[in-house]
Image 1: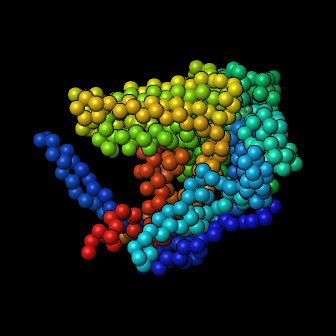
Image 2: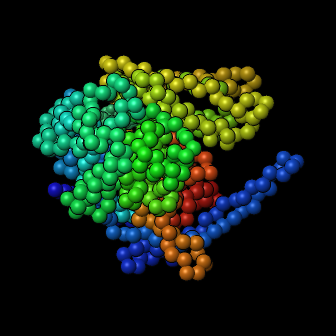
Image 3: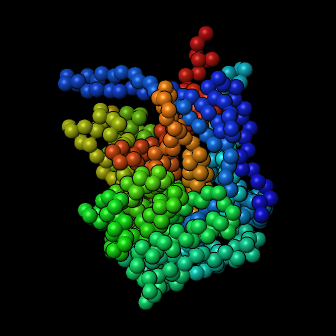
Length: 527
Ligand code: NAI
């Protein structure tokens, strides 16, 4: 059905001794340089540069890829499906401001560029992000998914009130033909106000498998297998964009290890959430699983299960509006030597996400996720945050449901900071986020990047007889798009947006044999 397949398009040709194509794979060598720092007793820091040689391998063939969304009938789910259909057909539609042609604005992979180098005159030259190495194109994704509500996507998009009416009309036939697969519903995990939506269930009340959680895992595995074979897919990525759940209690013997977690599912333990059930089903079959909501789907046992199965996971919670600004602004203030003392963040929104978040336990999940975003930024500057001055920013988060706001979430933030000699600076931001139009391009990026990262493998150079290995199961390269980045156990999250983007750019560069980006600009600055 794809009329403009552009998966795998590459417009960058590198001549580098550090990379070569062999057997449809791109091999490159890279010297990873860092420094190990040791704090001496007298407070001085002893720094020793380190370097490690790696060999990377990128499989150049882009697989036929499917995307299964949990929450397909929601605002994000319907907007995602519509955006792919509209772009695939290069659709034009009328708005009050005139004709719009479908695009993927807001997507890093589809609508941004990365710097390659300089031209003969020393001026920067950029290339589209997705034309440096082969990526799957979103137009080629086969989309499906689950929802606890049985509305077809035409009705669901009407309910969402996100898309221009003229676009809804143009897409109506295609959207109408898609009905989400039944899903699993444990009423205790999402707000009670969602009950009336739950009419499309694998485990309806009174059914034989109502409370049989292992049967739910098996059903999801079967759904994925059938979707894959019916659409002749090579690869499937599954992503949670369903309602925010409450946190699962972390209980020793239940979800602390992979083995205990599987046992708990088999005993249908009440603390195993629907999102963890989906994650387990995916992990068992090596299907990458991304969590776009704030809840702790990835309990320690779930992460261990992914590591054991070499299966990819990523999360948590899309970083779309307010938090994205925060991860730029807080970093900027602290890096400028200014000392933020308080950040007050208000939100009001009127979509179903807001309705669900109006329940205390679901709000709590969101609050935790939003609050963590400045932690690493504070920790990076001991001159501004220390035992004497205090190590915290007073960070307050409020979310209110105001139906009239619909999907146009309003975010108001005040950054109050200390300047030199007792002065103060107050920055106030009012940000209207058309929520799903911001979140949908993030879903596209998460899927495109996950598919891509799963084609990369590496080995340490000079180590004899080792095989190329995949990246670690926890795909923290995805942090750019996530509010509370999941990290490999033992590591802390990096939230600063620029750091996250730098990692992505340099990773693409090293795969094509280019050195990491630096902004030294010697062409200009030296004679
Ligand atoms: P929504 O409420 O419109 O859609 C969620 C959908 O999930 C609904 O259709 C609901 O019926 C369905 N659902 C609930 N439980 C389910 C289950 N167990 N299985 C299958 N489907 C289930 O919400 P929206 O606006 O699409 O957001 C989705 C999620 O993404 C929310 O958790 C939200 O917090 C998160 N998110 C959204 C952002 C944004 O839109 N900018 C930013 C960050 C996170």
